[in-house]
Amino acid sequence: ERTPTGCPVSRRAADFDPFEDGYQQDPPEYVRWAREKEPIFWSPKLGYWVVTRYDDIKAIFRDNITFSPAIALEKITPTGDEANAVLASYGFALNRTLVNEDEPAHMPRRRALMDPFTPEELKHHEPMVRQLAREWVDRFIDDGRADLVDQMLWEVPLTVALHFLGVPEEDMDTLRKYSIAHTVNTWGRPKPEEQVAVAHAVGNFWQFAGKVLDKMRENPEGGGWMQYGLRKQRELPEVVTDSYLHSMMMAGIVAAHETTANATANAMKLLLQHPDVWRELCEDPSLIPNAVEECLRHNGSVAAWRRIVTADTQVGGVDLPKGSKLLIVTSSANHDQAHFADADFFDIRRDNASDHLTFGYGSHQCMGKNLARMEMQIFLEEFARRLPHMRLAEQKFSYVPNTSFRGPEHLWVEWDPARNPERARP
Ligand code: HEM
Image 1 (cartoon, rainbow, N blue to C red):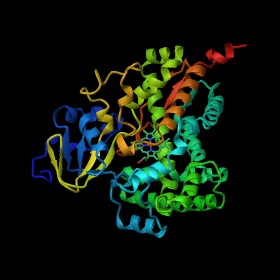
Image 2: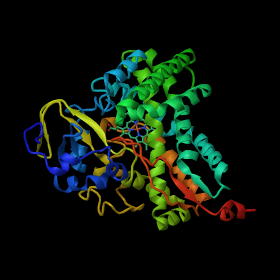
Image 3: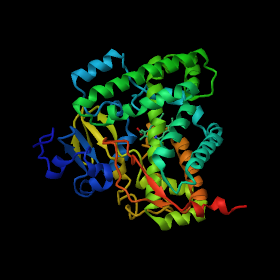
Image 4: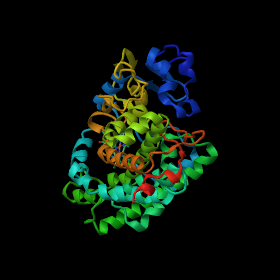
């Protein structure tokens, strides 16, 4: 087998399959061989070039003209005619948002929509996040056992995301139901018989997102990011387009929800796998902000991202012809010894932890990163204060097979409720 540039494909490159359990369980470990010996390789199974080193990935992020993000939301597994017909029947037209928008359209739109992400604006959401976290912990704190994903971490970031976007309360449940289908549709490998069901769910999600947006148009004075976008549209109609708003109404839920839910589940799993570190953090919660960064580096929730090459170029000495599709394995970059000393070591005091590429880098770097950080810090603070004695239960972790969004589907923890600190307080 040969690469599109005519070189032979190595055995390991030929075997690379990101839908396999090995990649799901531990992406940086799965591509360790590449990071060490063949940092950019062609994957015949995926039809992508796979990039694994920190410096190469940063260089790609830095140049969003040569390395366009246009394919970031493209279906990684092309669907069959039947599923495509189903999507078309719903008028599905998810298009450019921000994350997959090229210049010169991207930057003016990003700037126009940035204000709701400033630290002062984000502060307004803090009490809501804190209150939700407390209420959800209240429900299971006396049980001695909980699945943190099902019983809290999936729901709370979704509720925060819906509030942040400005979705009316009465529409939240319907949007909750649809949101997972988008992940499977975009980054997964649904079997042919599943594709049609996924297409119906995505089609419904698309139409419902449109209805919610129409409702917001009637009352664009609301406090959410989408209403902010609707007001900006009046000022800058060619920057904030209808297609953008409808696409973001759908993609924004996933961007803000699953990323953060998974990141917190990954963080708690990692911390509880290191009971000494968890104890230290419970004793000194001022360690939490850097611990969040280290968790995002070591075990982040976005494992890989995508770019497409717009002109013949080279990365790390490898020729990449125009049209090449790149899977940039940011989770591997985060374990690159060349950038992080003792890279596999989990060190919540690491001084360059925040150099991780889990939020991307450069002009498309995650706009929601400080909202995500705030949520994660609050969840960890609440767990550390109220359940410092929790431990990981015996379990096998499962993941939704896809290239990019990664977090355990369940996270079972146990503790002795008799030892809950709040029972000892008068
Ligand atoms: C972009 C990850 C949470 C909104 C991105 C990108 C990544 C990412 C990898 C693409 C970066 C690039 O191309 O350089 C994450 C992770 C999160 C998270 C790991 C949680 C831990 C959020 C939240 C929001 C959000 C809470 C809130 C709305 C966005 C937006 C973009 C983006 C709007 C597009 C920015 C642009 O292209 O200019 N995120 N994200 N994200 N994210 Fe996040």
